[in-house]
Image (cartoon, rainbow over all chains, first blue to last red; front, side, top):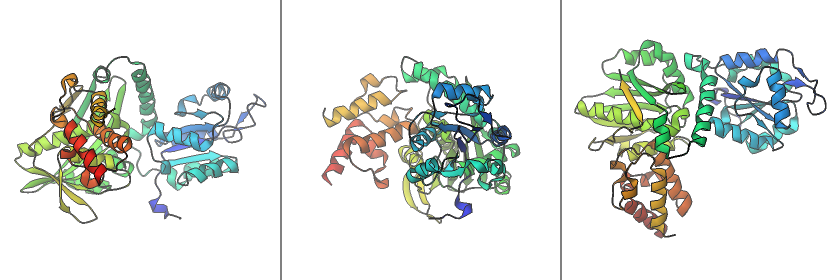
Length: 348
Length: 82
């Protein structure tokens, strides 16, 4: 079924074939392959917009990566898949490693067979003929609505994450000791005007860990910042490898009897650290101090079940339904979980 | 392995930050001992669904059904009967 252009998500990762796509020639037949004209510019342009790149190529891994390195392009490609496996399985591996939706992945390949094979398995992946590579920078799904400081750093943050995972794999001993060794700092602050671009970007990009899927634009967020009835909280996570940037957002509306959590979201990049529970606990504590109960709007989607579980296991109960197919959850705040010992929490 | 042993083993292996898990009793309220994060919660639900071939519906996602090892076992048994 064709979807309206407005329903199609922004592309988060472009996956490139190598032979005949990034370079002219077939590497295993001749080492003398030439980069396609302007391909470097295309890759760099998209990278600067916070769009990630990866590789799905049927090739010999070491030979192909050496060539990519010779061209000075290695740093741009995250989780390259170079093997003789079906491209659909390569795409799946990349998708899992990056933890993004298949419907945010674009494959560039000169072989119609490969594009069809991927689309047969995953119709939501956008497959584009390599001959169109020059037009990519003007492609509508490769032009994010916002480019924030976090989008510029996105690739670096993923690289830091790869290093982190590698160390975690090699770490011997209990997981809690590993987590403690990361020196995690979770900073919760009242959003300021300069955070709003990133806040808006978060509402658009985050699907898995999002309570309502609502998006708020800059002006709406700004209005709430300046309103006494609202609280807009934004959170950062840092550890010894670097900063994850601003990864959490919560919008609270204060009423006479209760606080209402209109939106609560967390970037998927930090899913494994359970920091969603930390921000939620913080808001619960604040509401309790204000002698209110806490309500939350929640809208079920195909992807956000984890958020529902987070709320239900934090002792929220369903008490009714609201407009836009939302359900209303309420917490009497009789039981609030403490923060995990391995995360240092700062508020400001 | 008995149902309860499977549940016990899962909890002990996944409750990463619980210092005293060696002494965890079947009645202990897992979520009140602290430090249960959202990832653990999701893993627990996936474990119950995958291991015991039952589906955990939205209305089953209540803390009471998952509050302790005994509660989880009772919940699984109830779902299996239906």
